[in-house]
Image (cartoon, rainbow, N blue to C red):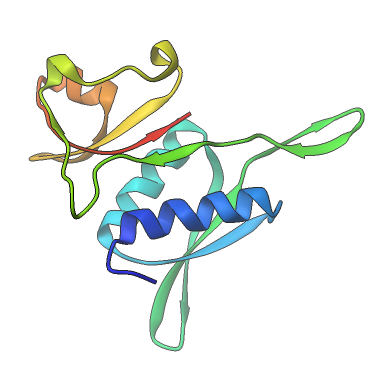
Length: 134
């Protein structure tokens, strides 16, 4: 684990998705909780619960999957970290990129908390672009 909790969160979800795991334990911080709430609200993950083990808090994520006639398969979620500790990327609300024409989401850190690109455009505030998800 590095000191960049957002990239750790993205890497843990991406690795669990490629390994076809159903659940992922993620170390709890306020930032990861905010991002996970956005992922849950937007439908990229199925469920979240808090878990405490050895006086350390974890978030247990249940990844989303679909059932078809041929069997169960996981929907691919692509996460990309944009701003990082060595290179911060900021954007005004007019210049926030649309991912896949609005299908994907951009997660921003603003003065009003961590929000999606749609909420930032409605509130007319910009901020640091944390990651893209589609």
